[in-house]
Each structure stands twice: as C-alpha cells, then as structure tokens.
Image (tube, rainbow, N blue to C red):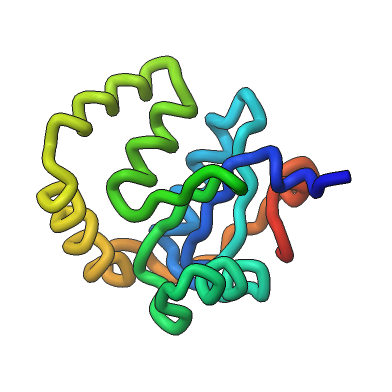
Length: 137
C-alpha cells in the first residue's frame, strides 16, 4: 500500500522563512480539492528529496513542487503549477507561462534573496486538520 503523500503534490519550502510560511498557509486555505501536502526542506524527508536528486541540501531558497513518480518543478514553474492546480481564479496564472522561465526565475530569485527582509520570522502553527497535510512536522 502506498503512502498518502505519494498521491499528492508535495510542496517543499524553507521552514524557517516567514514569507514561505505565509505562502504555505495561503495554499492550505485554498486547497479545496486536498491536492497538496507540505514538507520543510530542512526536514529528513526534505533532505532526502534533495539529496536523491543531487540538489543543494544546505540552502533553502528554492520552492519545489513534487508529484511523486511523475515530476518535480522549481521556482516560478512550481508557483505557476500550484496556481493552476488550485484552479478557479488562479487559472489566470496561465498568463505567466508566456514569460520565459529564465525571466520569471530571475524575478523569483530576487524575491527569494530578499524574503527574510520582506517578512518577520514567524512560526506557522497549523490547526489539527492542517497538521495532517505536513510530512514530518
């Protein structure tokens, strides 16, 4: 029997970043179809994901979206896919696909560089229902 997370899209994020925690909370509130689970990049699960793919395991400035056994996306491609999966009004994000990835990733990188300045460090505390959506909380 497969793990529950293998059926979901997993969002890997910097667990120590206030901006990242804000966006995790934002996705949680809009995930009406229960499509997402979450894992910090610092967790054992996050570290395993990174090391199995030969990705950086000490810097946590990149968002990853992983659909197990299918694909993983990074930076702006991950953000656009999350918005598309949320559907509804967020389908407008399809316009973002018109922008070449190297440009949208530059914008992503600039925001990432300044993310600690953009938001106070705060710890997001999920409620009981939301806790079930985190891997190794």
